[in-house]
Image (cartoon, rainbow, N blue to C red; front, side, top):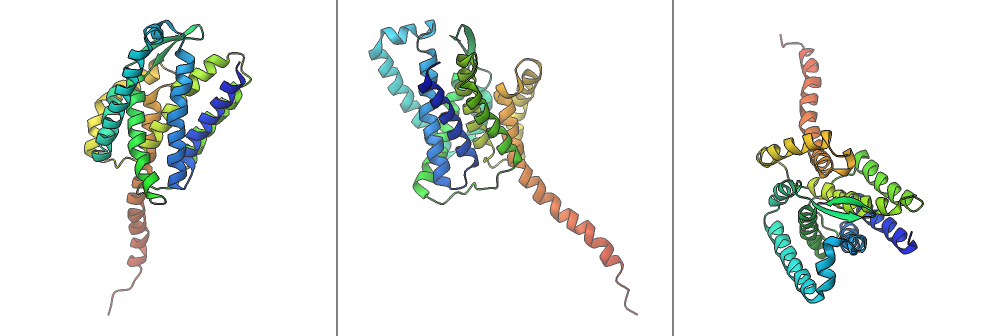
Length: 262
């Protein structure tokens, strides 16, 4: 196990945790930017020697041109998300099933490359206004036990990976799944959801949920984190709608006890 990779694994997990749990918007934006930079670096370190990347290694000029075009496309998609933020959850749902098998650590990992691209563009669209705006965050809301539990799991997993007998597998889990999904969770939990947007995603979610239950490990499937993120976004709305009804029910007996005027 490379000590530098072990430290980087813990750092990227901590960055994801800060991106979700920290209160100052600028701190969360900086942590998100750090995770966006460090995660693909670790991912490339893991897959660089795989047969699938043989053409990239042998043609560095084409690789550089492809990387530049990918960055341009990423910037354009982030610009589109900034103008039309409701597109992000729809494209995230559409991108979830598409996977690219990569051999790493003697095993095959299915990388969700289209979903990674959508998450990176959504995170970029989210963090730029907060870096410019300083302390202003229109999506600010309190963090609950679910956020702390999920990100605590991610950080604990990264720490335990440093003394794992199969560090390569643990690193794959962190950079291929847990950190990108944590950012997906954060972004979806801050979407301004309504019935129309939810119905647009519902059909795809039904198939993905079945896939989660029958095929993938619970925390290794993006559908799990997406559903949790949406649920976290809806919880405060449901609570606000329930409180007036509860107050009205509690006030009804009090009104019944007021004697009628003679």
